[in-house]
Length: 316
Ligand SMILES: NC(=O)c1ccc[n+]([C@@H]2O[C@H](COP(=O)([O-])OP(=O)(O)OC[C@H]3O[C@@H](n4cnc5c(N)ncnc54)[C@H](OP(=O)(O)O)[C@@H]3O)[C@@H](O)[C@H]2O)c1
Image (cartoon, rainbow, N blue to C red; front, side, top):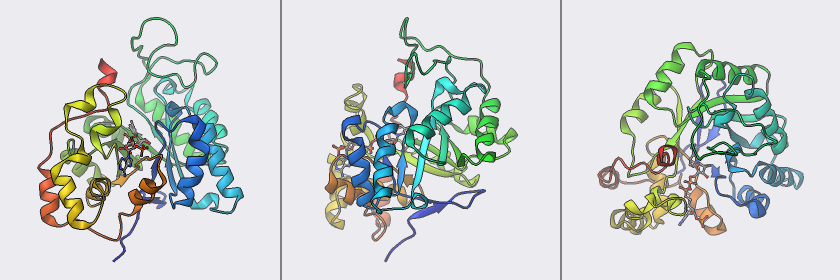
């Protein structure tokens, strides 16, 4: 039994792999080799961002894999994201072009607005990546009066100019998407949001899927990814050690990580796990030749806690 491992995106009909490799917190000194190894392990989608500060090294890993004949450019699906300080219509193009050049690519497969949060412009020679707060002064968010319809029109121009094949959004809620759908020329191909058993986002998922927008779940393992950043990760027991997840894994002969990723795949979500370890990297992709039982899914559905780990930093 082997299941379809890609989603077909609206407008372009591009095939987006349902399991990609996340590039957040991939250290610069290992990024090139890790991306190369991930390609060797079969990953074809890479989820990056300006904010991750590692696009030069990711680009090198991709270039080396292509040069060594592991893949062709057209076999890969490269995703990256517009940072908040570049939402202004005068900065979207330059920000995109800097990222495209750092990645060393002729085109991007999917360019995403990272957060629906326009922040005051920071020139790249002041700070890059700029992060959430101004480079000098108090650690306080400085918003910019830059409307989303202008930002989105610039994203659409990148499509028209053949620089990115698809455009998408991240961390938008239903209201923000509904508004975008009232004026867009091209609707978003994808929405990337935090989803795991402690934050299942059922109503959002149902509504967004009805709009023909593919959802990518990030932080599929829940709190684990956030412990190093804040204390938030400690407010719920680690999903890898949860009895329900462990016992389903034991029954199926799979790791807890695979159970969590497969649960997302069965909801027709794409996933983008990150791992520095080769063995985990390989197992995290083994999601399409087995399935969860209905009672397993019911048990996992029962873990909902409305617990969001990413985002608290915005308001703290
Ligand atoms: N759009 C957004 O705002 C947003 C926000 C957050 C994340 N993302 C994207 O989503 C991707 C994934 O989310 P995430 O970074 O939160 O991380 P994640 O993939 O949910 O979790 C990564 C953590 O899990 C560990 N891990 C991975 N596979 C494992 C396994 N099989 N067994 C045990 N531990 C395992 C990793 O450790 P090791 O590396 O040591 O294996 C790492 O500590 C990011 O890389 C990024 O591309 C997007």
